[in-house]
Image 1 (tube, rainbow over the protein chains, first blue to last red):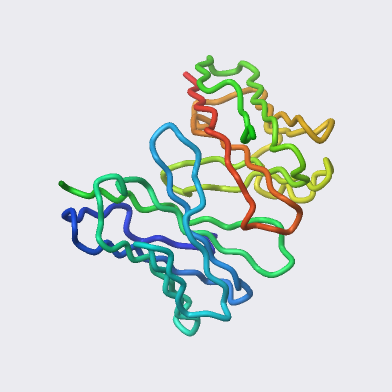
Image 2 (cartoon, chains in turn purple, orange):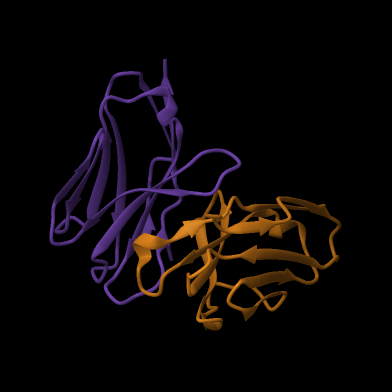
Length: 112
Length: 114
């Protein structure tokens, strides 16, 4: 059973506009969430994270929002750039655990 | 500082053959993970080790899959015999113990079983 779900396999946005990638989770024990970015032929790389004690974390053009009651998080990229085109994975963990549960990924294409 | 190193990067093999994937974690990291990427399940955890000891292998799909970590700087994932449905990208990752924000991935091993 997939504990972390990314229901949109792909997303296309125009350069300069906002990209919103969504993620849902089912395990209420998860309290730490991460987004990874993956380019073709490379491994995933860490992008941004958020703890459940927060509802927002911002790092430059990237902001992650967490809605604990809805078990939902989203990644906002503003403004989107062609170099942001990649597959984005949402991941979740819980305090004391030593592994991450990943979603299926969303392929973002930013059109110049 | 070198990252997680995986080999081979690409492997094409015939059904029934044994496949061995190799991983060298980041020096100083004491947790190691093997993931498999598929379209249907995304990044799926197969097994992970803490201090060279396998902790959770519940993600290993079948007895055909086995993993070892003989020392802190080397791990293998073996598939014997291989089947076409094993075709996927296999990632190795390492981290500091219980610090998931320190998980770093290798570049992956692309396996094709024909």
